[in-house]
Length: 380
Image (cartoon, rainbow, N blue to C red; front, side, top):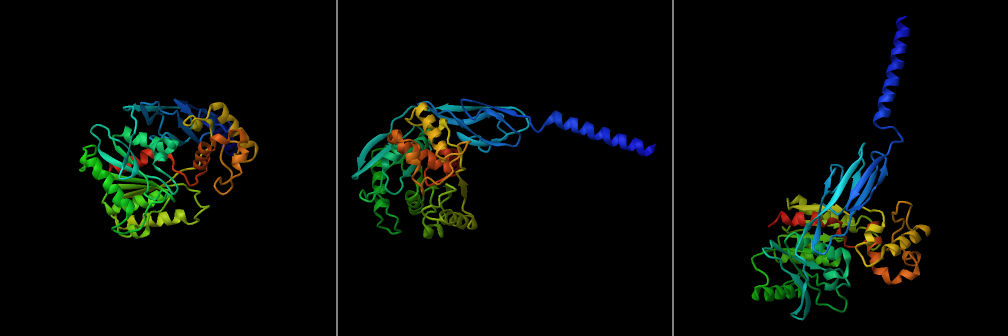
């Protein structure tokens, strides 16, 4: 009799446990993600990892942060972020802050093209350096990601100064470590001109940000001129500088940037560790690969109709999977240009920026705006 009662209790307990589990999270239960002022809405299983994107900011705004059920967001202060779906519905809202609508001032100083903007009561000056083959115009509005960072920096009360390498043939920075460095001396002259005219305050802290070969130059000039901090995108910096610099550095690296230099990421991590070993403040981040979705095209001149067609073409040719993830390295294999549809060739540059960033290849990306500016904020 006792054994019978024991078995009945076990059965009752099993049924109760099963019913309780079903009431909380049955295997087939979906949870709703609601994204206001952005994209990423849908129904998902608990513990799914999904991305959300904000809408592009208006002309007098910059992205500020996500509000609402943000506890599962990886980066609640970045306009694009990943989240882990909880066992429940959630709603998040992209919010923006108002900034003075501004236009960069363009001048020629010391024979170089210069763009700048200086907010009232600014807290520091961010100097931006293009990659190999680039020019000042890339940071001054020629690229969505570059331009978005510049607006974000101004929106967070930094003055911005953009110029270009003196070498306008190869369009490369002088990355030689010497007192007669052509580009360092040129930037000294440009800053001196702006200081003399009281456009910039010489006592304000300076910060360098560079992409690729411009990142190497950012590491050099920040060390040589004792800047407060530097941000290096997609490159390690200059090794000999990393052996001695005391300048805090943040690295923002594309994780699949291996087609040109297979050891690029490992080399950057090595230089990061050099700073950490000497107790120099440093940060190392990756741009997580993400789906190629129509929301990204809203930041560009490409229409939603064309964006939808381009994405469909790339999926049909095996370039994107069903969720929109890029399946092959677009830098190593240029067939995506034909695959997107030859009628969209005029949009190639903007599509290239998107597909490279989504894959995690060698491009500047605006998905680390907050990380970079907050790093700069630490060193006033």
